[in-house]
Length: 464
View 1 (cartoon, rainbow, N blue to C red):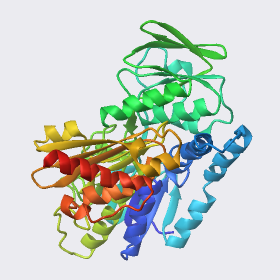
View 2: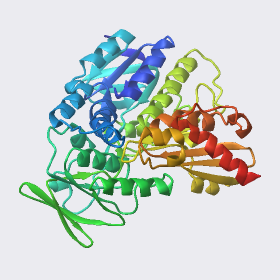
View 3: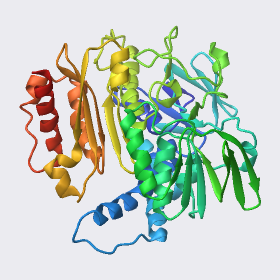
View 4: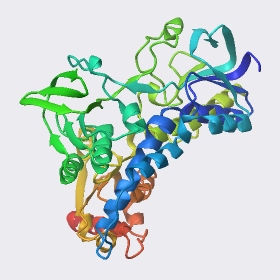
């Protein structure tokens, strides 16, 4: 192994892997520096294990909502074993084999910037001919609630890798992790209390959080909204959470109140940046004022989603290779080397009860940006495909129309299995497909996608 490469990547999660892979495909040499497991948070403690836990619960509930299906139970041992298989039992041999096959070197250890185009790992100094890309991700935030840190709280890591289901679980937070883990642990038999300072799923359409709160309560979750957590203490084999109106006792407490950039001990101060903060970048993912330093994925704070980080990684790897060849890089929106979608075309799925799938902006955000809009809502339960999908199907769809340009700015679906509706919405928003052309995208009957026809019909009547 060399000590000099075209590209050094700090962080071996899916984002770092993709930056390195695209650069190597562009003719460069690359090395990844990783202190934990190659594959990162998503593979072992986030996306994959959480969805593996949730899928059996969703499948059973889906079957129970179709008349003619009877019985059905979950085997906890099998659910956990299936989860473990998706994490490769927290071993990264397969990921390392992939790096080897892709021609990417790996250096294990904690890497720090120690100068321009220079990273030190232990006593080894690596130098980059072209660029260094920081893809170190984020950690779970532990807020300064009195007693919380000493109470040995779970974070998303413990929640997704637990080898047992506690009798009871208190969850502090109202975001995606809180909603998904409340769904998972309630579905696996725990008594769950969710404590949120305000509503659920802030930043999405308000009806999404309202329907998820209703769905969680239907699963037996004690959902306490607009409730502050005042203190936490551990007493033997349980924890006590003090809230405004009393105390909640649970076997474990999960803190799900956001993320903190993993940038505190990677040598940012040696290149004039402030440690512990998100790293500002331009749309080509390069740090302003530098011609060699990039920050890609969650660590730049643009969009904290794995698929969006991988999207950024493809742009960054390609642009690093292009600049190494002396090519002029055009940074116009929607070009190959820019991450334009980060701003207003981000798809997201919350695998809660019920599911939430959204892309683009909300109605409030569209108005705040100065757009003239129409908001079109439709009851998903009125769609023939939905009623076939589940008896008594309940859900809602919303599309935000820019009435000046006659294109979609945002779409949100709430209901069982709506994740599979999202890509069509993402294409419509990202491609700015005119409403007049969307009329010709005929949805197959009888599927849930017929909601597109109903939304367009509703807009046609409203705008007539």
